[in-house]
Image (cartoon, rainbow, N blue to C red; front, top):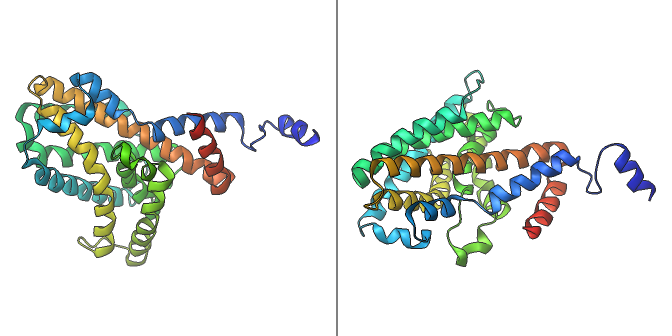
Length: 276
């Protein structure tokens, strides 16, 4: 009883976290464990997201895979250049508007424009993610923090219900942890970026394997005859908003880990995830 009274007196609940931090963690759980892109696309095109992929030709998978890798490579370059620049505040609304414009081109001209459109929209989203990271206290001059911005693209979706056990936030983060650490160490030791360095290629490949799932859904939705340019812009807006929400959740968790330690935050995260 004395412990409960003391916790209440200093503004903590019985988990040891301040109420506002626990509320932030609860919101992060919703964003990270129940990402909304599938629902948004389903509402937009009027059919379940699982069926959207049927709109794509069989040859599309290689185009998507190549564009996804190029998009992430471009995002990685931006993230690492960001390490060397003075932090600045951006506009989330501006980032959405720019991504929407690039999506309009994708919707109007289809799969043929993906190798151009996706790297552009991925860079725009990366800049938005970096702004969110800064607002949650990240020091983007640190390689690990910069790489964590790119890591967001792997955290933003589910590969499917059959794969749910390997899709949870901490599971995916754990799968990427070694690659992030190795890449961050490589960058810190070299002090420069070597394109094509195996350690960076492995990192991009891991992220691309998950990011590509959502890119496929996005492209398929834009390819439907009812979508066109305006619908393509709407799909990209939803795509960008989705990753902004995932980034906010991810960097909220990291901020709370710096305050309370990784063990306590994960325990509370998993407890809250069960409630959802």
